[in-house]
Amino acid sequence: MLSAAGLLAAMTSAGDAVASPAGRARGGGRQDAAGQVRGMWVATVANLDWPSKPGLTAARQEAELIAYLDRAVELRLNTVVLQVRPTADALWPSPHEPWAACLTGTQGKDPGWDPLGTAVRAAHDRSLELHAWFNPYRVANHTDPSRLTASHPARQHPGWVVPYGGKLYYNPGLPEVRRFVQDAMLDAVRRYDIDAVHWDDYFYPYPVAGQTFDDDAAFARYGGGFADRAAWRRDNIDRLVRETGERIRRLKPRVRFGVSPFAVWRNAKTDPLGSDTRAGVQTYDDLYADTRKWVRKGWVDYICPQIYWHIGQTAADYAKVLAWWSGTVRGTGVDLYAGEALYKAGDPAQPDPWQDPAELSRHLTLARKHAEVGGHVFFSGRSVVADRIGAMRRVVADHYTDRVRLYPDRGRAYPHRGRPSG
Image 1 (cartoon, rainbow, N blue to C red):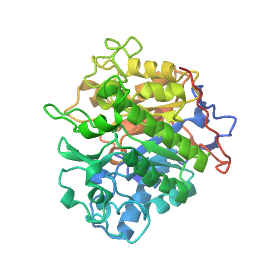
Image 2: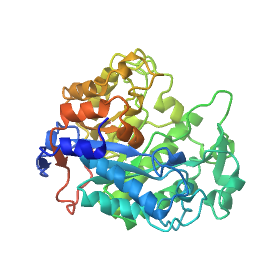
Image 3: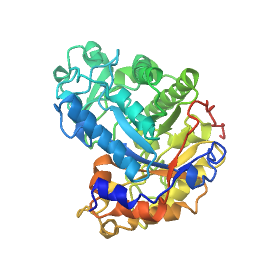
Image 4: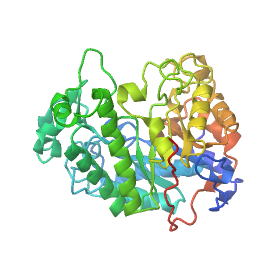
């Protein structure tokens, strides 16, 4: 495997193209090479990617973060999606929530520097976009509130919290919770020059067999007028998405709002509008996230479904899922990026297609047939750096022949482009 320095040297002949505002078609239209999003997620929850472990010095943490940004440049990427609110805590000095435990090992302890502020400046210095990745409702990867710092809002408001599946969650059915999580996330929008607000796939939690998410009291209080609890839960998430998008646009119109959901909205067997899949989880039914509606209503600026399957996979074929999303965004003004499972490449537990370094490159080749696909985002940073079987290098060699920057005119306001489509 090439070192970062070796890979950079191998790429010295590459140009540095700049995407002009006109050259980057937006919202469900074909984007030329100079407008393609080329991104990677950098996860902080449980120190998955960064920091490599809690308790490092501020200088060591910063050096590791900068190394990820430099790696993105070496690989001719142009976007880094950094997780800054992993478990209802913050990677910036938030007035709403404590410092994240992944930094020092102790939730609420000041790490001695501002990771988000540093990341934004360093990314822009390298002509990278910085998308701030938030998880709206997850509070902790355990069920013991006493392990949270004493000042944590979840301890100050115990009625906001529901234990489920070995974790703690804020209850999406409470209006005060919805307002609070928006305020907590939008503080970062207000204070930093981020390029986008990015959410992952966790809304109501993934189903856990034999367990019930206890929102009886909230449903009794607020669920009147809905056909059933599922419809009420979907409305709760709809409100969060719509309101957050509206508040972002009022606060900073240039900042985009994107969501990266589990890639199956509904199977066609469940709903004729769904995809030709047989997935065990459907976001509409199991996470109460009506992702298709958000796109068709134009409540988000981009959608980045996690299409974490190989081409030809039986229950969820990458090709079929990508085609479904291409059709879903068409004419809506919402951009489409494909979330790519780089972490599966070379994993011996995965089926044969993932042992082939060319599998991911084939995904990008296939995407060229769909005018709506505006780029790809790879999960996740540690896998990008390790590149276990060279799958990322193959993508770069086959598809990223020049480095491109998305927004040389970053000061220009981008109005919301979504249009209601039914």
